Every structure is written in structure tokens, then in C-alpha cells.
Length: 604
Image (cartoon, rainbow, N blue to C red):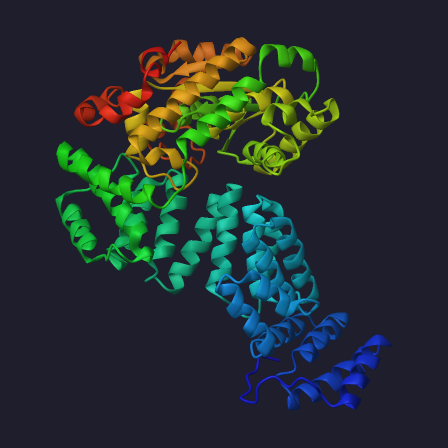
């Protein structure tokens, strides 16, 4: 049984006797009779969506899963001619969500329920959206597009195990589609299974090699696995098939150890000239090409031209994101004022006592990946990745203030009972368990932005370790500004914003050190480069870990690394980057001015 089309349109009312007989047989558990009646009816009226969905349930009752799946797909296809659903979809896509919701109110058929879920998602109600789309899939397990949407929602909520379960089901669909394999690969990447994702990409490319996006995805997986030559080949295949593919060019440049040559520069300049800047769909290619040309020209020693491309790329990217420096500073000040020594003393004991997590916090491009690679080379420490769980917990708590439940952040934090703190700490441990693949007693969470939440970490995970990876603000700031981040660093596309952000970071970490002395161990990048054995010994001593020689040979560690420094940490430490920013100092005055006093006291 396959999805069928009809020129007759939707038929609203089947012959009462046929439909009633089929429904009665289904209700009586006479599945064979119900199936026979429904198949006869649907041969005459293939646009009868409810008939297909009822047929699907009956086929599943007798174990005909593949036929049931196809029946669901036929029901979805038939629903595409439903006038009310079409009107609701038009209203939803036009942004008139109230009209769209009103048109399908009261309906419980799978396509309408799935659309209701998308309406809630567009409204920002993720919980309602998930519940509705999960129901649509439960009503019609063969509704592939609903399951695809559900996987994307689960990924947005970091429910990775559930996402993988649904991705496995979707990959078995009788309606084979490479997009289903790609979304499964994206789930595997989020879970840290780069090798599993690599195998999917290679299989798809063996079938159809002219797919630049799949070549790029393969490059990402290979880079993370440390297979640099293969990653370079994959990225070059991507740009060979699509020379304007800015992200693939940036992926090449972002390997750090690869230098783009004069022919590459000429190809990128030609590609940039062909892209229309007024087309929103090409803006990502444009700014990626600017960042790539900046890196290529910087490597070639053409500093002024390089800075010009970095500047244009950053300016364009800044128009596409929201970052309010004053608003962010206010949030940091609220955290600084809430987590005082008096507050911690008043709280007493509490929280989850697990000592598993080692948080590495700080600004991006400050050496956190180096610290992670050193520590994950220890036999008692597992490296994972930049985990979003603590930020999600913090965001959920902040929403209670934003929604008016508490007058301010301090009041909300003070309201947390010992039971609340224990629950939140255990939630973090439970939610991060999926990223742990060894029995090592400690694991690293390298989300740099967690510096904003050191007080919360201390409150709900009092035995967790916190490492502050810090670098000279001019070096760190310039390195972040010339780096395009895939997500999460909205402050990094303006030199003034970077300076203000660094200043907030130093202020909060200084205040936390006064409130909880010794709880954060600082690692200065410059000192780590100058005296690696001494700094590593001090770091391990702070963590109560025995010294292991493997930590000094960290570049031999073959673990997957996803960050921009993935190739640099697979080499011995080099000193070239420490003062590199001086080459561009004459253009960095906005950064220096915004840093203010933080430029003088950053390492205290």
C-alpha cells in the first residue's frame, strides 16, 4: 500500500454504511474485517484521511507494521487536500497564529495535532509543542514529517536519548529519504558519536558524491576525530562542488594548521563577488567568506587587508544577532550581588555532593581546550564536550524572575530550599550522564559561558571543581573577534562588546573568589605556555589527582575534540600565539578602551 493522489479533492463524508461498518468491526476487535472494509472503501475514496489512519491502527494490531506505516503516510498525503488545514497553514506561515489555532481548534487528527504543535513552538511554548507533536506521532507512528519535527524539538531541549530513539525509527521508514539519515547523524554528533555520523555521511556520498553539504558535514566529523588530512579533503570537495559555500571555506581556515594559498584566495574573492548582499539566504556565505579571507590574508602577512575582511565579516554578523551589553552587565551584576560570602554562609550545607564534574570556564579562545586536553589525558578524567545542561538549568531559574514569580534574581536564588538544590544538582548529574562513555570518576564540562553560573554551581554542586582558563584580554579579545563561532558567543562580533564582556567576566570571578576563596583554580594561558610542567602539577594538585606523565604528552590523546582549537591541541605547546595580537594593535583601540581597568588587573 502506497500513498496515492487524487484529482477529486477531499471527500468529507464516506458512505455511512461502509464507514460505520468499518468502525464497528475495529471497535469489536475484528481487525481482518475492519481492514477488508477499509481497503475497499479507500480504493473508492483515496482522499479519505480518517480511513487511512484507522486502517493503520488495524494493520498494526495484526503485526503488519510496514503496511501500517504506508497507511499513515497515505493519510498524511490525503490530508494535504484538507481545506481547513490548508487555510490554517497559510495563516500560520503568515504569522497569524491565533487564526491558525482557531481553524484547527478541537481537531484530534494527526496532521492537525502536529500543526497545533508547530503553532505552540512558534509562540515559544516548547512544553506544549513537544506534548502535541509527541501525540501526533503516537496517533500516527508512520507520520514521518511529524517525527522529523519531534526530533528537532527534542534536540532543542537537549533530550538526546529520546531524539536518538526517534531518529532510529525514522531511519527505518519505508519511504527512504536521505534527510532522515542526516538528522540521525546530527543526533549522533550531539551525543559525541562522531564515528557513527561519519559512517552515515560516507554511505550517502558513496551513493551520490555531488553533495557539498554532506561533504562539509563529513569534514566536521573527521576534524573532530583528528583525521585532519581526510577533513581537508572533505572540505575541499565541498567547495569544489559549491565554490560559494562560505562555511566550508571557513571550516578549512578554522583548522588553524591549514594555510589557504593564493589560488584559494582568488577563488574566494570570485565567490564573494557573485553573492548578492541583499539576499538574506546568502549572508551566511558572505560573512564566512570574509572570515576565511581574513585568516588567509593574515597567514600571508597582509595584515591590513586581513583586518578589513575580519571587520566586514564581524559587522555583517553583528546585524544578525542580538546582544545588549548593558543588559548583560546588569545580569552579571545581579549574580555578583546575590552570591556573597554572607549568602553562602547562610545557606549552610546542601546540594548534590557528587564530585564528578570539573567545570572549565572562561572566555572562548583563552586556552580552555588546552586545559581540557591536558586533564582528559589523565586516567581518572573523562573529556566530554561543551555541555549545555548548567546553562539550561540557569535559564529556567532566570525565567521565574522574568515571568514575575520573584522580584529579582537574588530573591529567586534565596528561595531555593536544600531539597531544591539537591534536586537541581542531581538533575545536572543525570542529564550529563549520556555524555559519559567510560568509568572514570571525573568528567569535564568545558562550556566556557558557565563562568556566569559559578555561584549556582557552588550552590547545587558544592563538591564540583571549577577551573578558570584565562588569557591576556587583548590577545583573548582579538582571537575571539577574528573567530566565527557556530553559536553561543553573541558578544564576540564587536570589539567594544568583547571588552565590556571581558570586564564583566573579571568582575564576577573576582567577586566570587572573595565570596568563596579557593573554590576556583585559575590557569593563565601565558603561564601554562611558559611553564607547562609546573602549571600542570599545580592543576592536578588542586583537583587532588596524582601526577601522570600523559598529561604532559596531551597531544597524543586521540579523543574527539569539537572546538576551534581541535588541531592546535594535537600538537605540543607553542608560543607563537601569545603575542600575536600585537601585529594588529593599531586597530584594536575600541577593545582596549572598553576593557578599562580590566586590562590592568585581569590576572589578579
